[in-house]
Image 1 (spheres, one colour):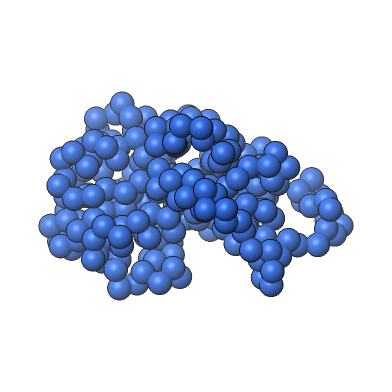
Image 2 (image 1 turned 180 degrees about the vertical axis):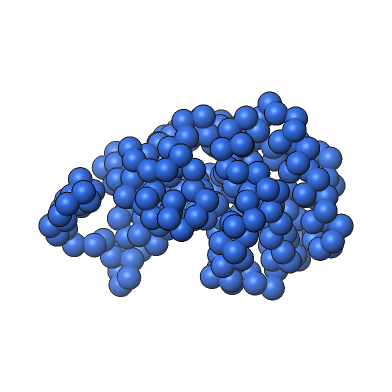
Length: 247
């Protein structure tokens, strides 16, 4: 089985950390195809960043489709371009926010999200509503850490301390039974946080890999009917011409 993990931002260090998180949980015989993007912002922390990241993301999904992957994982908690990616792909496409929120609801009645900057709180809240978890999601808490500060998350004790303090505050204030890490860059902190917080801590990258294995193992593929159908190839002009789909 081949699962493509796509980091839609241009941080090479974060791409590698995401790859480590995916490989740690992948089953024997699962090949992780780690893909960065050919173009896009260094980090995704705004609607503007997301818009810049989407062409590269679509190109990466198309690459995975041509290489016959069994599933794609979009490794950014904003789940950027998720529906567009599903239109382009033949295999299932999983967003780490959607995967993590589903997993949290299987482990606890209510969960809270630990995210990066304050401005990303509304994105996580919007996704919780979109995915039907408005009741289960107690609250979204911002650590105040920019995404690129998490490039050293695996080794920087200051980063861990800041995320831990935010997580402890969420548990105390919200009474939540599980925590969702609201950035792919937090994946290296998951096991360490789980060991000290006393509640399930969910990393969307790991959960999405296991869900991808389950869907593919069950013989399921992406629906290509209705609004899931592959877009028709058409001329694309100007600076976007390099991202046009072929038949």
